[in-house]
Amino acid sequence: MSTAAPRTAGPDHLWSVDEHLADILATVRPLEPIELNLLDAQGCVLVEDVTVPVSLPPFDNSSMDGYAVRVADVAGASEQYPAVLEVVGDVAAGQADLLHVGPGQAARIMTGAPLPPGAETVVPVEWTDGGLGEGPVTGMRARSLAPEAATGQVHVHRPAGARAHVRAQGSDVRAGDRALTAGTVLGPPQISLLAAIGRGRVRVHPRPRVVVLSTGSELVQPDEELRAGQIYDSNSFALTAAARDAGAIAYRVGAVADDAATLRDTIEDQLVRADLMVTTGGVSVGAYDVVKEALSHAADEDEPGSGVEFRKLAMQPGKPQGFGSIGPDHTPLLALPGNPVSSYVSFELFVRPAIRTLMGLTDVHRPRVRAELTAERALTSPKGRRQFLRGRYADGTVTPVGGAGSHLVAALARANALIVVPEDTESVAPGAEVEVVLLG
Image (cartoon, rainbow, N blue to C red):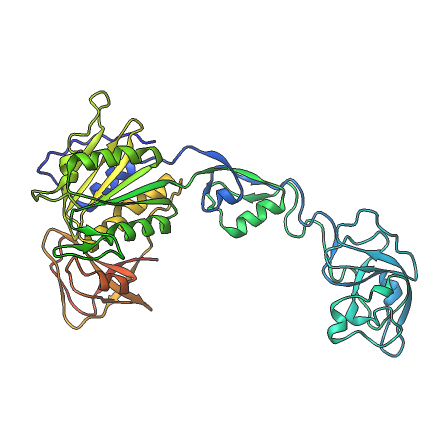
């Protein structure tokens, strides 16, 4: 699935955000293309151009319920002097054997039906008496043609120009045109187009399968009773939702207790359904940081470059990080911090680009803009660290939301952006221009 990149930095190296991200993106590769049915390919990325085999529409057809006629036969028609035409029959959508419309004749036609030979234009039913020998059809009667009017006569009260209310063959796309280009993400409109041109299967990069698991003996599942010292497991829900939002098929694993052997067994069990694994918690320097304990020695001796390396990054929040590959297929694994804000910020900066890369996309990053900082006081930031603060962006301005604490989940829920404070900046005054990462 991936090829591990060489990592030559020593254990005491303080990685920059850009170095860590570059290492991840140099390691992760797009998933191998597969052929999928259309609905299974929703959200996937095309790996090849799709050419139109048949024009759309494939034939001239009517855009209205009405009558197919010759232009000369309705020229000069009016309310006072309607054109009276012989109705030779019906033309319905899907009909193969078509009537011929000669001089002085009309064929009753339905929306989407082929324009019959001899006809040059379509007169809407509202411009006629509907074949009932009365005035123009209006109101509810205009919505459908009278069943008894398939033959007989129709009075036309308005003229129609050549090919009026006719959808021309190939007016949407022509045979031989490029319908979709490689790299297109298949959403509902693209799937509609593929179906319309007769393509039932396409070659795509599949959506990556992402397994998310959190660690910590203190974690309890929502709806369960909290006991002393326990908290609800929010990280696994947040990251699973974020992975799905990024385009992945994400699986959430219940929280794993602080036991290295249990964690190793759980990860090994989950590898069968993972193109990428994400853990949260247990990557710091505490006595119970089991992710480090479980994965620091997970390298395959026969495969140089495998294993997970734990690093310190020059960023806040999210200083402790882990990255590497595990298992026989060298499945990429990103180990994120356990604090909720640290975990989510790390996901946006590192995991989301990895997911988008696995999908085969070239633009893998969230959009970034410059915005004016609106705040009551200056923002402070530790020297030498790139800080990411939650913010609310609107109309070219951004306002901080909540404090800098990495446990403030409520503030995170109100944010739609991250305010970026560079490593060499210790203070940002209100009114200053800042870089903003837009979330969603």
